[in-house]
Length: 337
View 1 (cartoon, rainbow, N blue to C red):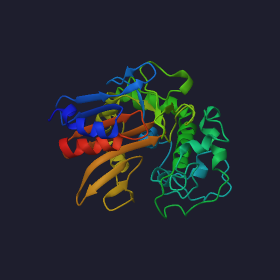
View 2: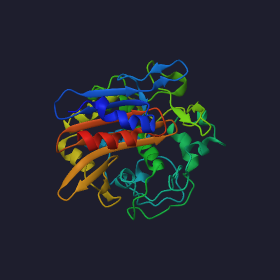
View 3: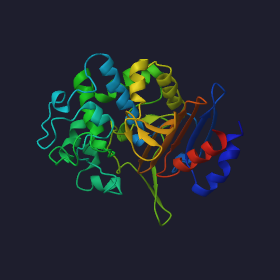
View 4: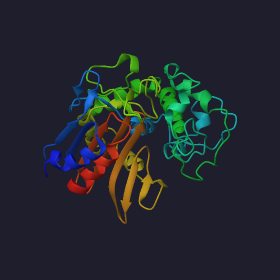
């Protein structure tokens, strides 16, 4: 493997990347590189043990949780939303299933429609983000809206659907969503430094998210996101922990072979080579999957991670800025994968 720092040096100067990169090919020793500051005010540098927010990258955790509860016999993928959540949705179709929610094909309205709204911060102008601490706090933002499409009709990326999946996890497991994931996914995968942390209770070595402004100044993202993450996004991980997640998932430590195959099935086509499984993106070429990957973007957060089954390579790119992870991921794929 080429020196990771050498590969990243050119792209680093172009995008001013702040974060940490992890690359491992097959069973070779992992290569890591860190740039920028986890705390700009105190000039604390990012490192391999820094915890980063990963935004929507943790929808995979939600999908794994649902799959585990299916394995436990508490749910099925054909279970209808109306039969597993004690919440009234007056305009939702009765035919919405867990499969539809997992694949972004439910047709329900979203509380943040990424095709309509450009700025996630807009959500919190009239609804203070510090009030958003439980999953039920999101419901007034979409539960009384009209359906956008019939269930199964089309793919439309949907954050609200994953809020509902989190509520389903809570009702089926009788645990809070974050407790369930930390116990049944993070703990089993050995992800000892990962968790769902509140902005007002951050543990040590957690990166602050930064939003760079046009005039050259910056601000943190503490008023730009819900105070605590959940099933649609907002967990914190280290690059090493995310690599452990991929290893545990494909090593069948989290799901049985049949259920894992279902999660990795390209259920919904998004573009020519892009598909969506359960909480995971899939890039396919004829006859095989090129990579399984997750990504996440929030104000002050950018994240990409992938597992490449042909070479058993793993890449994790975490950034505490709004942009940069994609550029680094593309450079790593071009040179190393």
